Image 1: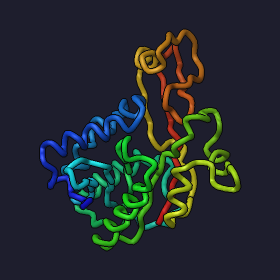
Image 2 (image 1 turned 90 degrees about the horizontal axis):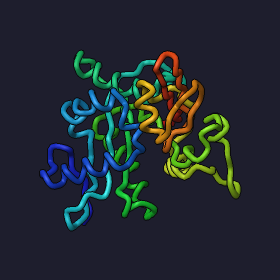
Image 3 (image 1 turned 120 degrees about the vertical axis):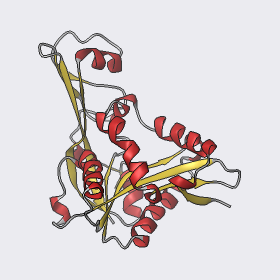
Length: 244
């Protein structure tokens, strides 16, 4: 029978599967985030019971739900533009300063490639809501990364979220959340910030960058802005705040 386990309940083999699942779920540009490199270990250390792994009867990992508790006292419409990055830093800051949380933030929901498209994502979303209920948290908010936005990197997210196909929401991840009961709040246009020198961006672009401007990087949801004279490039990823 399939089951969910906390991070501390994972065997060494399951932790390896967990790492493989997370590291292969996103394009390389996301893995270049300094925040992810420096703070993710704190998420697992501080909040092990908020990190849930979905395991099948053969002890194989099928997916993961990573969440973080935090304190929020304003209206949800006032959630910051620095969505995902802010959520990581806020949850860690609150924990380290003994601030009691009242809200739950979703960091990521991932299914292994062989388990995608089988309806399991709704089970992972439901587990996120179970984490919220078990910990008596009022809000469950997520700065989601729409699945197909990378196919339209030059389109503004505000336009993308309104795309329809056959009278249905175009993006499958937004559509899945809405079907699960979520409501779309707003776009957070600097949700994840990645920056580095021109050499780093050339490696990600797989080509030489000779002049300043906007560049499309594999898997990125919107263009990267590069300034050759200053030897600097910055990626400001647009995500979408939703809530349950």
